[in-house]
Length: 180
Length: 180
Image (cartoon, rainbow over all chains, first blue to last red; front, side):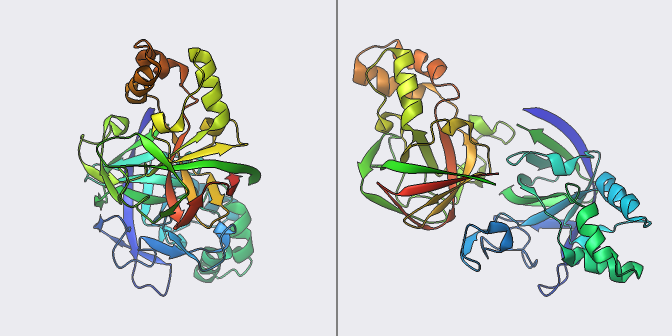
């Protein structure tokens, strides 16, 4: 097990369940289902196109409770797209990390331990789709970005995670990344 | 995603929560916490020595709901120990598979889809300890096996898993192994 240190640049949550776009908050209290009230909250979730091996809509364990990004990968995607920035809100991120640049390469099963108490498990790469691309395209005013985002963000769109130890996630937290 | 086919040779569960030793049954109905009534059942479990990064006893998400072995790895461990067999009961297995020999090498996050309906997630290698070694030593009548088991079973002791899709696991089921 190798250990790395990173820092929480921001924590975010959805304002309502109708949109995946998130907003910054000071901190979040998470439980076994994720972030109470958030769009992705729950012990169960319907299978979607990313779990093709289940019939779409089948209720399965929710391993996509949180979405995490790295500042460094966001900057790379923005550079590849020729735009000034990729805001974590646009991608529906819940945690923006700084100091562990290749977040998307983190192996499934890696743990992230937050200074404020919560512990989470990496459930794997978040595969980019056109949803956030559309949000970026609208924000920047360039419709071509919808599709270009999907390609540019491949293997740089961060990870999804689920809660192992309920607790707090706070902006400014140190995070210990435990890589198996 | 690569697909492989295997077969369920046996399914097993603990008879009571006081012992990890399991007994064969025809089938099991599993839910989000694992096998109801089994020693390892629950949405939460206390952190132990395998989660050193949490204070021992802290209640965390239970990712060690099921234990799986392969017939082929059991035979290799038995051969290394110079004994006739390793029975899955002695290791507290819940599922014995045939046809996916290197089960312990399966990467965390791989899915196993059972013909009878359940879907499970590989949570990683089951690290051998002296508990099952002691059961083997007593069954075979050779005290040296307690320690020798730990060494011989390294990277051959199967995996632990948690439930993604509640349903049935049955002896004779075909299992599709989905490797990311």
